[in-house]
Length: 357
Image 1 (cartoon, rainbow, N blue to C red):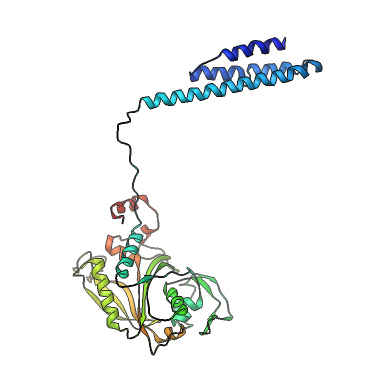
Image 2 (image 1 turned 90 degrees about the horizontal axis):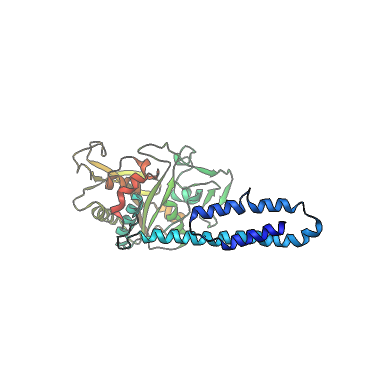
């Protein structure tokens, strides 16, 4: 009885043919569904005698495999037929849809432009670790032990240590503190320790300071610092280098002024202002009505810093400068809120599609 049913359904399966998805689905439900013919036959198979099971078992498995193979073959034909029908309705002569063009981040644009300007003056690019020790971040740069920058309020310390550790270079003692670097000046120290002048390089990178996040400040930002050390380097060389940089970046006619300042690692030191690029010196919110905006700090490398790095300060001199890329981008693109640079708002970033270089 069971054998006759299998023979009948086998002939039906072999004769079945379709490219219609609905008809194929009905075939699947009838033979392979949870309440289908194959399920019923297997239930009947449980009641046959052990002698019949030996012969019917193999036949029943082949019958199930036949139904599954038939369904898979017809399903592939149905899918291919459907795809061909869809393709035949397409007008292949129509222009394709283009991919949306991305944009570089405004900070990346400014960073690249700054590097290209100084490359014309022979400055190379040097990089260093963002996690730094006390020697390279503070001590070698002439920061006294009581300097406020060492406090937890200003620096993100990763490890604090009370004992002093040797620098490994025989150039003074450094505490075992480990911190996120507060400036890229640490790269200058590493460069000077590793060789002898002349040095002429830029140090771009991300730095960290423990500050409240607002429209004008952030706990991390980006810097570009520069270092030039050689024989007979003067403050006049520093002024002319930075004047050239400003004219290239903001255009000819941009005014520059230097104000005396103080930094532990330079002497003498200065801050450099430029005439406000937004109001052209007339006075606005960006320049707080003064017509001037401070963009960087600079000065002659302190002889103590040279000596800490194993360089003869009586033979060599040099200058250094440092600027925040965010500040430069603020003036160049008139962006008033620093938080926009790190919020990854696509609406903000899309504005710089035309600025891809």
